[in-house]
Length: 202
Figure 1 (tube, rainbow, N blue to C red):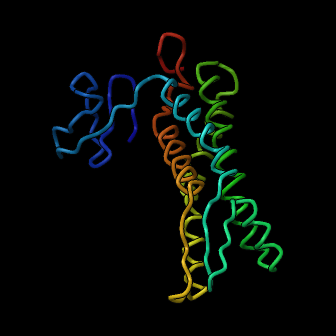
Figure 2 (cartoon, rainbow, N blue to C red):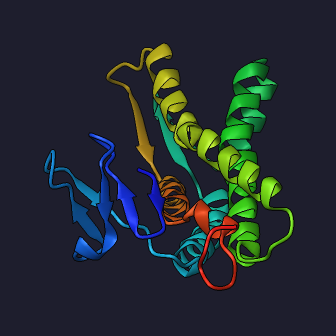
Figure 3 (cartoon, rainbow, N blue to C red):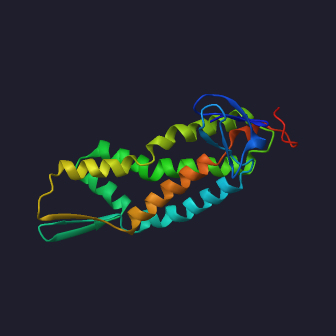
């Protein structure tokens, strides 16, 4: 959904709807009836959600991610020990994917969101900031890649009745990291980058 000064472009029929007709941070299109969210012209929510995700990011990588019990042998691992185990067993491509999806990409996305939150209203490097926002949007779809990968690995192992896989607190915290990072990205309005101090587009 696009948003310009005084108007919201409907995400269904592309009609320009006056923002003053909105209510509760949303506006209903008078042509198709779709409800469109009005992004607040502030970076405070993006900053708050990013900070929450960063706080959760540390324990998500320290606490155990999952426990696998196979024929009575129990093995509890963190994300990092899981990556190391994959490398030791020769699954280098999978280890690289988990490393990127679990450690590098979430941290990179948070770093960009922090940068945009603090410098969005600064008139310098507008094209760079816009490009960084586009990168955040592009990599956002890969946020849950390692969760899906874990499901695939479990299926490949053909777990039998003597095997139990149990998620631990680390997986819950990592899921929260993904959720808060998605919220931080969703509440960032890139048009702030191109507005001057008076809220007008430059």
